[in-house]
Image: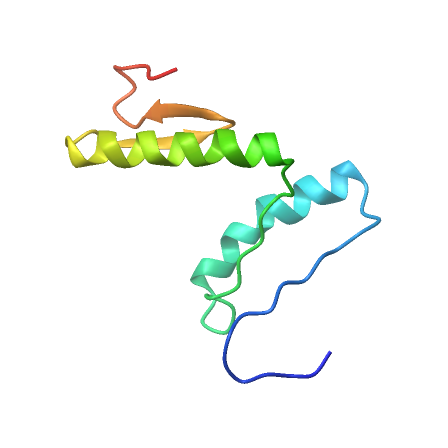
Length: 88
């Protein structure tokens, strides 16, 4: 497509096997530390039901963080960085 200076551009990659997909997603974290690519994000594709579940997890994580909890989402579950509590 045409190159734009402003705005974001979605890009879909197709035909990648599951091993390659996992490798790409695992290595995508390194983009944050790269000066040239720090605004590039790679996300796994999700079904509408998965998107809804993830959205509800994000809302719950926001609530817990507002209460001072140190939590994050890992493999579809809310985990505590303190490892003392479980928020399943």
